[in-house]
Length: 188
Image 1: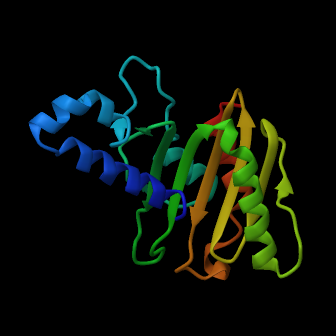
Image 2: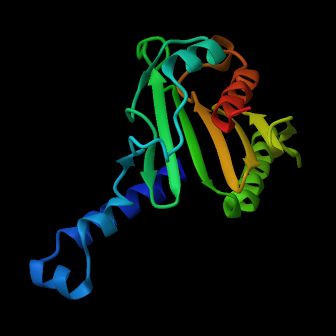
């Protein structure tokens, strides 16, 4: 949720700037193209943007039908993101899968946050589990989410599965599946 809020704030700020008066926009040099990078534009058709794993990939890795929330990878400034939700809202309410690609300069903060989350969830100082994906691959599982992240080629790749409204005994352990999706996102 922490990553979604800054993106939402950027999108709203960009829209606020874009909606200013014509004279203000002319004076400040604001154009639609200057704001577009922060409003969730889709990956270009020219293939220059990364691709999002598919609903079939989510089902293969996590074992449940999923529906697209973003219609492909979206670009928000330096961040790329896409997401899915469980197709069966009745038996898997609130289950979501978020894929994110951002500059590797965010890696130290993200890995530090992962360590804090797993330590808080387990009650003792703990580090996320190492995984053989990219550089510094890590993953963890708590009672409400599972996350995996790795650095490769100057980018930080992460996959987060959230299932706070579903009992873990019903939902099962999705850590291995989350790592499988991370490999798919990274391209290995």
